[in-house]
Image 1: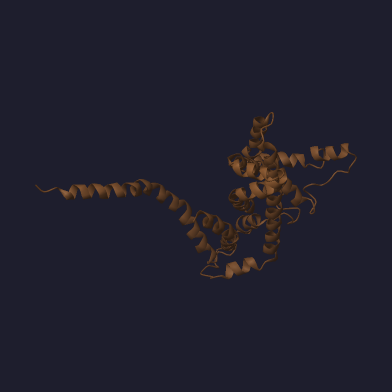
Image 2 (image 1 turned 60 degrees about the vertical axis):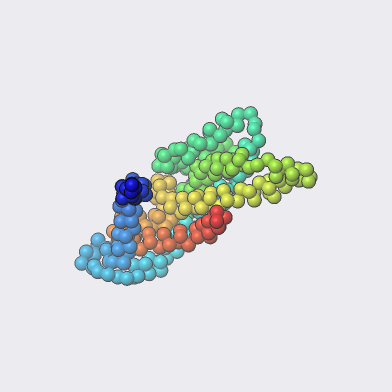
Length: 299
């Protein structure tokens, strides 16, 4: 008696194809939502697409990118973005780690403190920015009232070119330091106790254990935090737009705000797409060392 192999082979083929068939709809949706906009952006970046000059069309090659990156506005926006990303990220990491250390050992009310930490980054960015615009208000805002209580003069928090960017950095630190704290606190809680007990038996103090035991074991988590927060800071737009609108002058104009100005105020979609492509390349180049380290550790 012969065994019917064809139905079994067909069933095995269907079993193998089933995961692909089930994932196919979502893959098509993702391709439509990500691949098509990316290709459209590349097409606009290498074509003349200035709505103020509708007769000027055609393939331009790299001229749009060259025109964007050689502008003084690009270098200024890149500097503003770099200062915002580096200063905010550094302060959020240091303060977030110190607060996580404070909550690491169980203390009275620690659950309440942890719950309160969730609130800032649960707020809508635009609503939060509107609230901070009232706080920064030079005429009767809470910050200037506090300065007046200590006998200090009021400050133009968002109208001064020297104070506008630090004010926006304060807002971001207030909103996102709790997020860093919670991630690092989860990492600290998950650390094994044996290395700390061994360090204690060898005479290591609290800060020595933190520096030589906890931080090395938290290194992959710190890299993830730096990667995620760095990309998030790089693309920040809403708080800048609501609180300062890029001003005073162009003191707080980031790359994202320059892109918005090129696209929706100058109506030059070719140069705006070229800037978006340049920003994508910048993010890929800057995040490569972190990605290599994370993937290398996994391998």
